[in-house]
Length: 340
Ligand code: PHE
Image 1: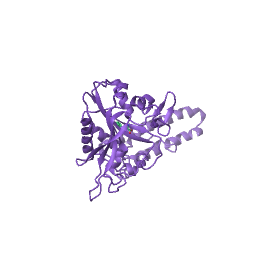
Image 2: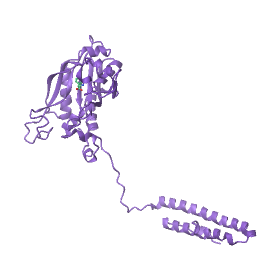
Image 3: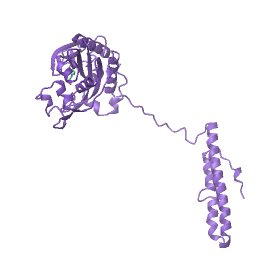
């Protein structure tokens, strides 16, 4: 008879030795079971009971030893794992450059009292076109620009975030100051400068006595915050069905900087040597749009603007190819940590 209590273990190896000796198939206990067939039939029952008792005792002791080892592990700091192995690296992801810039844009406008709103990417004709004063035969409604999902009634992937303007005005009363970032879709050939989906951020400000001067000042402030205090802004007359008057907004390229432009790194292909790059459209919300959205156009005026987030991100980080944003190459994505 062996006193199992005399066995103690200090580490995993000794525990394994105990298991080999008393628990495994080839252990002494295992061998006893093997002897069963040689025992005279009339004694088998008794023999079996004894062997089972031994097995039970061995199992119990084994459990105790595991527990003991776990406990001493806690006290002595000894572990069952090999601390000399190289660690599995803890890979941290990075925030996508488009998200960095979107968040930075939101931050700037939030400090001017804008909130953030969102609308659906699958949009009906009313919110994407009709309420925004697009005439029935406007070319943007046609297949080459818009991904239609259903015809009659028309359902499409939204072609701009201006659709969110309408949704906000339908649901809220002025004063409205809202920023609507999101993905938009256009049926365009993919190249370094264009993609069939991209991101915009829409701004909308509706209140009594909102003027074009408010629009200009808001966007001046934004441009200086995002691109630096030296940045100049200019507005060129333009046309959008939903704003009147309308403008295109340019920011200054650092064209005379001998060290090269901070936006295009000296390669003149972004500003094409003009010293200005376009970052979005803007204008005073057309009274028809206000009325279509349930806002009294006699009492309220407002401005709206829309900017391409890819465009701004490319300028901010001197990125030359728009396709990089959607390729998920970690060598590209890892380079961005902040858009401040
Ligand atoms: N929706 C316009 C575009 O996608 C941009 C814009 C928004 C222009 C708001 C004016 C006012 O080009």
